[in-house]
Image (tube, rainbow, N blue to C red):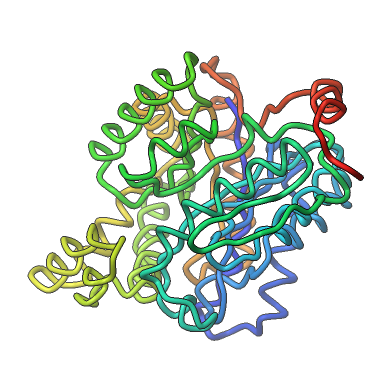
Amino acid sequence: MHIGYSAFFQNLSGQHTDEQVYRHELALADLAEPLGFDSVWSPEHHFTNYIMVPNPAQFLTWVAGRTERVQLGAMINVLPWHDPVRLCEEWSVLDQVSGGRAILGLGRGLGRVEFDGFGLQMADSRGQFTEYTAAVVEPLENGYIEYDGEYLQQSRAAIRPHPSRSFRGRTYASAVSPASIDLMAQLGIGLLIIAQKPWATTVAEIDGYRERYLELNGETPPAPIIAVFVAVNEDRSRAEEMFEQYVMAYAHSSVDHYQFDDTTIADIPGYEYYAGISSNIAKHGRDKFARFLAELQVWGTPDEVADQLIDYQRMVGAGGIIGVFSYGGMPFDEAEENMRLFSEKVMPRLQALDVDGSVGCGSTPTEVASALSTTNVSW
């Protein structure tokens, strides 16, 4: 099974400058390939200390220049915050300089502070996500972008450097709603599971997506990827302390950043799902919801962590797992120990699993070159 590492760039402790956090996270990213991880990932967030990566492609291009083997994934690009042309160009460049190692991640976004910072309306995000997804997937297959919709009007333009490999099979979307399952299936997009819902809900959504994908395409979809926060220690009591200190701190930061306790978010079209979350927080308190989020993550001894991740893989038929090891104000040295112990004691068991599906495997350059040669594009 494919095992990835994700940088996180949180600055919650107040004890470090942003520059110090960046030095630390870049050092961990440098460790990923030597430690045997299969990929390096980056989220996207803006304007706060929650996560400080405004451009995943920029960070991953830096990683590409320092590595030879690991794949490079976005967890995720929030489409309403991007110009689709620029996004296609950035990912075509990343794929060129990395020799075809890019894995494209797409999402709709939830942080109100980020939509406000960009001067965007969250109520438009569902329509933007739908149109922008269709608009960026096609250019990375045929080399030009053209779209005429309600939110995006884009005249025909070439993507240069033009794509040399297909992104089909290495494009994923997160937090997919039932309303967008058809779109993801039609476009051949896989699912990235960022653990934020009850697993029973996630399993049901994955099953529905698989059925629809098979119905529309006559083939099975890419195996999903799971992203989780990991706290591992040889001493189980210390692993529990890490959970209480750092996993819980991450969970509280998520509640703060996404304003899950704000009941008005459910009034925004496209975000009705969050009515249940805000009402539960009002009834039971934010700490209980933060604990629910935290308990979706993974902690314990190496054997306990491996066993739990294997259970998660089996529940959803995952083709890969992405671990986050530095978060929640965790001291720099402890974060590195967390990552190293996982790579030494947990990752070999996971990578030895024979699972259905592979992560980030698109078409060969020859296949795409052939397709491009028959496409009516003037370069």
